[in-house]
Image (cartoon, rainbow, N blue to C red):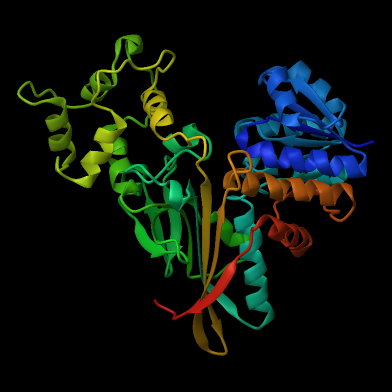
Length: 446
């Protein structure tokens, strides 16, 4: 009997966990679920008799080794920085590893040893990264197979609130890890645009945006997402003229978020003095110049160049950053204090549904003519458990694990799903979860 160990049982793992438990009933697998509390692990298992609840606290290396030793396949849904630790234990005990996270240099360094031991370490098999890789490579291979040459590739993804539940002035709610949202973009952006290398530092990232439309879902703005240049080799696009990966938000978000960046309150590198004595109003005031003749609101607007009658100002007023409300206990860095406020205001309500939006743009030359194709996907969550984020993060990985354990995937080494043997069967099964792309040819534009 095979045992699947899932380290981490957060919201984005919910759909995957239930799918593997259901598949395990048919295939004779047990699924061990870990979280900080046994109650949460048991809740994720529900009525399934093949589920095993366990507790695991990050940093407990002895317990980690014990859990891995009993598994055949290990799924790490822990924060990405812990994956190499899990991976090294998997190597020493000859266990296969699956994650949704980016391949780090530390993980990549384990490739040769994993191959020599016949182990598969599959990474970047979620939504972004994951579905973006698979759908992009499928189309790139199709273009090449008909004799075309890809000269431009742009890929944008966003986790947002579904239109029917978009009821705040930011047009945004948390559909995944709030900390990652607050710290997003701090690595800046690097990409290639019509043959020119472009670099955007963090303090300019949310100023350099583009606007586009996706299917019938209206307008979205895009900011650059990390280092797009890495994907030239990953996708086999050497010689390409344009490659860009970005993140979707609704129009107006980036302009307002940039004010937080300029103010410095997305910084997580130091602790504020006496945070237990702060209110949100005094917290904001601490980042403004001393102006005894101005209110906090007017000082804020003057310093950041905001019109107090503008939609941008209304976003901040709605958040409550000017209120004399105590900062929650335990928040010490500027980013933590901001996150606490946003978690209260941007939380998903009981009946809210989320949305994942993804769009690829392919520019290519075929028979001497330049062409452009769009490939777009929008998926709305089914409920507050099977959210769009949970489906698109967890299901590619769940399907990959099922395919692997039923001998339909036989790769070894540190992999991401960019080859047909991996992406074709996963994408085929994802259609059952409404993960499907709509392709359309549009006029080519330089």
